[in-house]
Length: 447
Image 1 (cartoon, rainbow, N blue to C red):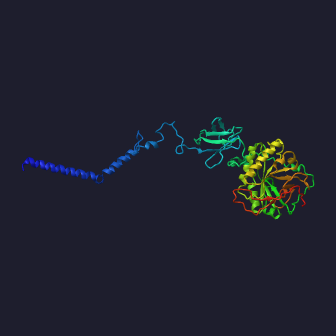
Image 2: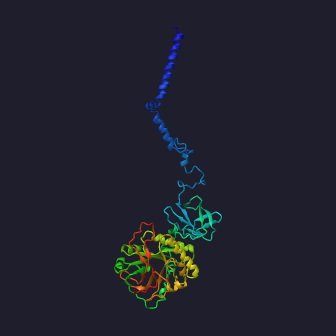
Image 3: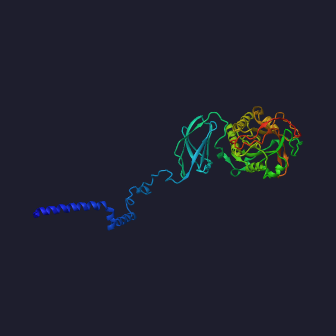
C-alpha cells in the first residue's frame, strides 16, 4: 500500500473515532458536567444573577416573575380582586313586603354593618344612600315590578360587582320575612325612655272591686301571669310552686318614637326560666305599627324570637296607647284594625294561634273586633265581674297581683281556652304547640 492510500485510511479511521467519541460524550453530558465541575459553576452563576439587581426585573430564569412585582405596572392601574384588594367584605340583602324595598348591608359574618354611607344604584330610579348609616336603606311607595340593584364602590370595603334583581310586590303577602333579624335592636341601642312608653288603660278604668289574689284554676279555666322586663328578675321555680298554670311573656315592642323593633331585655331569661320550671308559655308584642308592612315586620320578629321554644299558648298583639305620643296612637279605628289583622294573619300563616290584647274601652272604641273574630281576645278589665259584652278567651283581672318569686306587682289572668300542653311539637318546624278548644266568654272570676 503506497503512502497516499495509507494516509487516507488513517484519516478515515480518526474521523470515525472522533464521531463515536462526540456521540458518547453528548449522550453522557450530565455525567461529564459533574466530572468536570461545570454544573456547580453554572448554578453559582445563576445564583449570582438572582441576587444581583436588574433593570429588567427578571428573576433567574423565570420569565414570568415580573408579574409578582408590584412596581412593574403603572401605580394607577389597580384591579379589585380578592387577591390584591384589601378591605372589609360587604354584601347586601333585599326584601319586599308590598310596594317597598329594603336593602340591608352585611359583612362576611352576616352582621349588619353600621357607620358607613353605602350607596346603591337602582335601575330606573337612580342612586340611594344610607344617610343615617344604620346599615339599611328603605324605599316605599314603589310601583310593582322587577328592579335591578347594584352597589357602588366604597373606599375600605370590597363590594360585589354584580347586579341583583328583586321583585317588588303589588299586594301584601302575610308571610314571615326571612331577614327580619337585621331589623331587631336591643335596648342598648336606643333611648328607652322615649321608646318603651306602653300604657295600660285598664288601670284607669278600674272600679275598685278587683281581686289581687291568684284565683285557683277551675274546671274550665286556668290561672296565669304575664310578665316583661318591668317585673325584673323572676324566680321561676318559686312561681311554679305558687300554682301558676301559664305565663304570657313579652318578647318585644316597637319603639313609640323611632319605630324600631326592640327585644325585651329579659325575654330569653323569662322564656327559658318558665319552661325549665315546667310552666307553659305564650308571648305578647306591644305594637306601634302604622301600616300593614310594619305589622308584617312585627309578626316576623315574633316568629323569629319564638321559633326555638315550645310555645303552648297563643301569640298576642298588645294593642294600646304608648302614652298618647306614640306614633300609632292617633290611628283611626278602621286603619288600626286593618293593621292589627295583618299582624294576626302573619302569625297564623306561620302556624301559631294569634290574638289581641286590650282594655274594655280600647277594644270597644279603638278596634273593630268584629273584623277580628277569627282570633283570640285577651281582655284587660280590673273588676270583680267584667262589663265587656263581647266574647273573650282570656281575662287579665288585675295588675296588682303578688306572688312568691316576683318582687314587683304582677298581672294575673284567667284563661278559658282548653290547651293540651302534653303534645310535643318541638320538631314541627316552629309551628303552634297548643291545641285550643272549648272557648267561652264573659265568665266570672269566681267560677
